Amino acid sequence: MLEDFLDALQNFRRNRMRTFLSLLGIIIGVASVIVIMSMGQSSTQKIKDTFGSAGLDMVSLSGGFFRRSRAAVTISFDEPFREKLFDSVGGIKKIWYKNSLSATISYGESSASASCAAVETDYMRSCGIQLERGKYFDVTDDVMGAQRIILGSSIASTLFPNGDAVGKQVMLIASNAPFSFTVVGVLKEQTSGMENTSQGCYIPRGFYARKIKPNPPADTVMVQAESEALAVSLRDRLEAYCNSLTGTEGSVSATSMQTMIEQMGSITGVLSLLLAVVAGISLLVGGIGIMNIMIVTVTERRQEIGIRKALGASPALIRRQFLVESASITLMGGLLGIVLGIAISIAVEYVQAVQSFVVSWTACLVAFAFSLFVGIFFGLSPASRAARLDPVEALSGE
Image 1 (cartoon, rainbow, N blue to C red):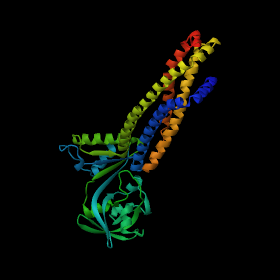
Image 2 (spheres, rainbow, N blue to C red):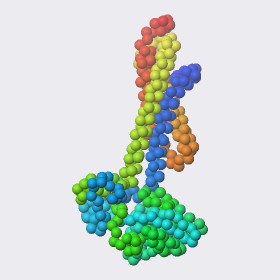
Image 3 (cartoon, one colour):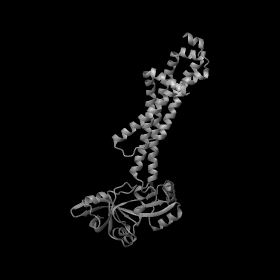
Image 4 (cartoon, rainbow, N blue to C red):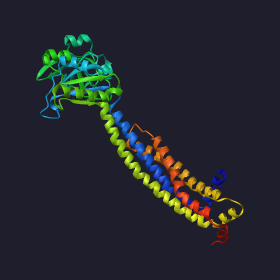
């Protein structure tokens, strides 16, 4: 087979233009498959980067406005509900209550609008929300309802352009009531799942329950799964449990970042696969072109085939010779297609300024293997025709 391969390379050198045109269809087909699959994986990775790696083990439960049906019965997210939820649904590591409010924060002559969240102790740590400066709330802040606040990075930059926010007093206006807060921390700019670490701010839920809305039920229940892998199944179980409590569908809206990422990744994957199948058709077209070229080659080399048969070459050896030549074309086309596909993918990602680029090595392997299959499959008929040639007729040129 090595000798057949070297002979094939000699034939390619003698017919460079014909070889190039034969390679072109395979190169374009392989490169197209790789580009499409790599872009699909890069898009999936970009989605994950956009959502961030923090908070992927969290499931959010909301009611009221988020009801799927007007006839659905709402659930009050009070302390008895928290206890029943923890005891009734497995796989829960921790449950936090959170309330949200729109507020205006001012310092001196500067002010900024913010989405403020009243949270419980250690919630921010568990969500992976990181601090640029300062410290988190402690148990005392929550129990005593301390007037302390942690600012998002953009809000801190607006109010304190010099970066000296920690320790300063800011005025927070919520529900038309002004409150003075001490800044104890500034959030790091990051992507953190369902949390707004840029335009948001955080205050102790104990303060919210004392001064803004006494003994309030939570607006949102944040449930932490025992692991990220359990978040999707936990979301379904939480929704089913809440529906069983009310006897109606849509009593709560359960959201999991893992579910959203998986759904979007699934959609991207299906689209990429469909486009890759379409691109793979060009490989078949290239294979038909190779079969046509190989038929012409067999016709041109009838005398060579006749001489080899006259010297004792078996039909199997003749068949193998042309199969190796056909497979060699797709082998080179597959390798060049992989290089071209990766180069185009990198170029497109560079132009789009997308940070996360993922080469689909699976696509490279599948496209390369398929190109070899195409070469052997479409080269089989011409090779069999060469093996069946009668040596006398071949030598006579008839």
